[in-house]
Image 1 (cartoon, rainbow, N blue to C red):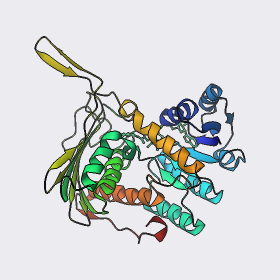
Image 2 (spheres, rainbow, N blue to C red):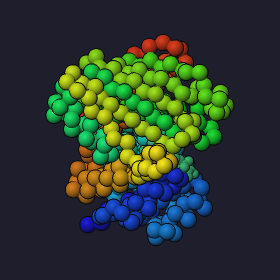
Image 3 (cartoon, protein in one colour):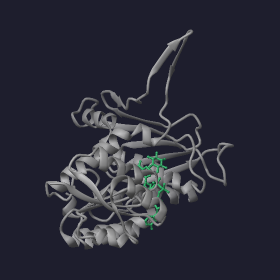
Image 4 (cartoon, rainbow, N blue to C red):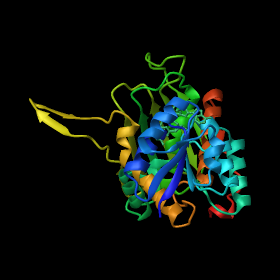
Length: 336
Ligand SMILES: NC(=O)c1ccc[n+]([C@@H]2O[C@H](COP(=O)([O-])OP(=O)(O)OC[C@H]3O[C@@H](n4cnc5c(N)ncnc54)[C@H](O)[C@@H]3O)[C@@H](O)[C@H]2O)c1
Ligand SMILES: O[C@H]1[C@H](O)[C@@H](O)[C@H](O)[C@@H](O)[C@H]1O
């Protein structure tokens, strides 16, 4: 059986997902797509032989579309996921699930009322071989009880219009999900410290920032987020346990040793660094949907809601300078 996928949003990651679905993922084809930029949608559709619709709702309601990928901007996600749930279609929604806690909660409530998990959120680090190795070492007790997690999230630069809040809601949200997943615990408080801004940060953006996250069980996670680091894309993670530590290997594209020097390449951006993770994420989702489990596994609507709630607490802390508690609703049994 071939899964017919509809894609909404064909910008950077949407067009990458279309290409992967059409050429690398087995058991799937891109049947239909939509982007508000019709020219862009048309060019992407031509490459893979997909239909172009004139609105997002038509992709979701297309009877030949079995499942939907959402890769439009974050503030469009919640309404589109709600439409997928109403149409009973499995959906892989790029992060974030929603840009407000209220809209994330609406998705959660809709899915619970529907009675079946249909939503998966694109937290692809759960599919990265390095993060998976860290998860195995934490889960099998190799490092003992996890106490601390140190993270670094650096981008060479960010697009115009990126804001201080987006460092938290768009970038640190990956560490928020990774911490909840690796430590198996909810985050209950966040504190954000804005560092003296890099002279290269434009439009008054507070960059870098330091983020402290506290889990219900008392573990603490620190994240340096620095989105104008210039030299490349650098994501690091170390979990410190009672008996040892486990850290992410930073993949490089080669090590050159000559003339008394050793040089290692740094990935240019997330496209390069996480390419295998995006592919694994899509393949697992397609396989999951095809086997009738709605694409379950990976990050659920609950994970998307919790991550949004923590990111919003970070935004509040950045603005107030105070430690901010995270309030989550009770976890519905659908996500037990
Ligand atoms: N998981 C990851 O590592 C990762 C990486 C990059 C982006 N993302 C997420 O993917 C989403 C898209 O990011 P991007 O970098 O591809 O952005 P982008 O700006 O390159 O692409 C967004 C596309 O959506 C289109 N669009 C805008 N409004 C729309 C609407 N209402 N309906 C349909 N299409 C619409 C735009 O025309 C554009 O083509 C964001 O939520 C972002 O956070 C995730
Ligand atoms: O949207 C992107 C994407 O999510 C990347 O994975 C992250 O590293 C960037 O900081 C963010 O801006």
